[in-house]
Length: 385
Image 1 (cartoon, one colour):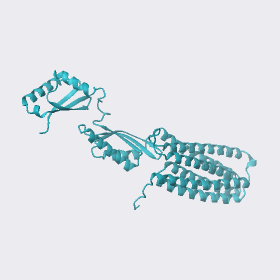
Image 2: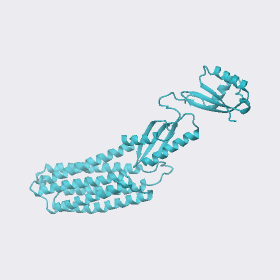
Image 3: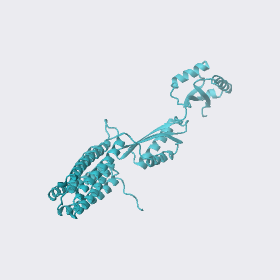
Image 4: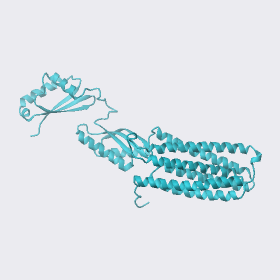
């Protein structure tokens, strides 16, 4: 396949396109619902009535989608710092439950009628033409909705599109059932109604299950996680990766990761590496947000340093071990690594010019650090000339 993909619509355009496709679905389902139920009752076709009730559930679902699209597209606010995208998820769960309830009710009704010989009657030929019209209308609606849903990358709209496809499949069964009934096998109309009900229930279970998995923060699939992992590891300055966690928020992903960097770089350079990694994931994977935590060492494999005291206490401890203040120290950099502390002491220019004093300090440090419980090493550095 050649050519560049069409650019992803902006926020406002996404909202209007989603509204338009849903209103088209509403109009089609209103027309088909009325037509199927009225003609199904007149023509004595239980399968067509069942399919009409299916269309009625579609109509209710469409209004729920309109509600979710309006409220789920709102920007983040104080109470919802990650936005309102999970309104779509909750709506998808409600859609699934509605379908499950509709399917169960229709299946029960068909089963009851199949046990009643009086319910097995020949349907009117008019119901067959309405069933064929319904099949064509729902298949066309499915193709249109799926095209827009994939362009918008909206899981909710795609769920509604496949809902329309299940309607088309059920309408095909209805066509076959009515045709068989007209051909002399009168029970086929009720059997078709039962099959439609089972399909409705299955689709509802699938959508409800997927929405529930999102609401309990289930990870993205393995392929998506592997792609995000590769993007993070290929970022310049990233030496390793652990604790990569993902979850979905509507049709977007939330990503948390710990990345390993050179332990002795500056705070600002570490921040730069983190921001670079974050920007790459946002761009490459369309994530909603990415939280990158910088680690100077793999704290999932080595002893953590959280038990160590803060800077002020460490310096007091060092001064106490030396018996006096550190002479000539202009700056002290501390590295919390491997459960201990490595220190770098930048000496003043004047002190650095006293070789004997520097040697004496170095010897004293080596002696007191032999069995120190906090410091692993102290390195003396001369200031730049």
